[in-house]
Length: 321
Image 1 (tube, rainbow, N blue to C red):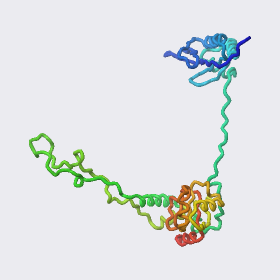
Image 2 (spheres, rainbow, N blue to C red):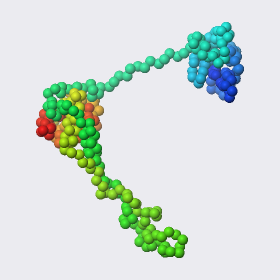
Image 3 (cartoon, rainbow, N blue to C red):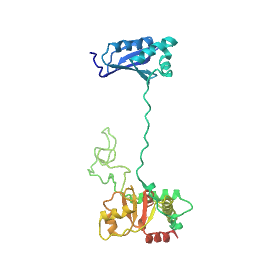
Image 4 (spheres, one colour):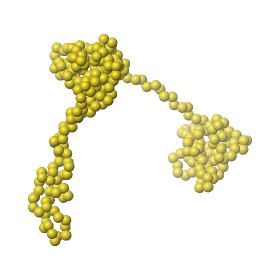
């Protein structure tokens, strides 16, 4: 009774060039350092056939040319390759290229990329913005430079000069002269608190007196704010609505937001002066509550949706005049 072949034995035949660009073919078994080098392509393939006929397992050989995979064959197709290459008297330098063009080797089918399913985001949530006042949400020109300057000013206003280094007059140390002025061979020194000594004061280090605030004109700040609101309106990402809660409840706020399909958005900017709404949204990482008088240009640009009440819209209309 014939024994059933089990595992697959893998072999490789690849081109190899010496210093004079003379070609040879390296025959190797997978996971083994020992390999054979043959001067002719057919000798390497015949060696594979000889080894395969003696093996009790299935065998397959992979061909490599110019360091790239060109295809693979089993024992039966290897014999066909020997026959075809011999009949056409193919040169060694074109042997692997020949069997590839003649489709004498098997190649794996190219992987088909499956289209990814996009998750629900702000672009899929659209609101009617046609009734919004054009003086606030409908500027004819978006002032990009004003937006840039406003963001820099906002970030600078948040920055505090809390970093500080000590000068030579503030570090702890003796005021005694380290050594005599002359006849020591050392350079002149008057204090160990000098910056040239270890533990001495810092020269031109940061101080708490620095001010990071940047000046921006009122008109530029207004243009930046209205431009950011216009961009949200153009994306239909402005919802005019006021959430009113009886008590502090995150669940109740989520229920109201779910009615408007805002729960799964990454960044919801909620404009409200209601303390109950503010306290209810504290545990929601994707909801940011702010007053209409504290609107940030950077926060508006980062928001997926702006939720604002009618009264706050009227406040913005007053700022736009």
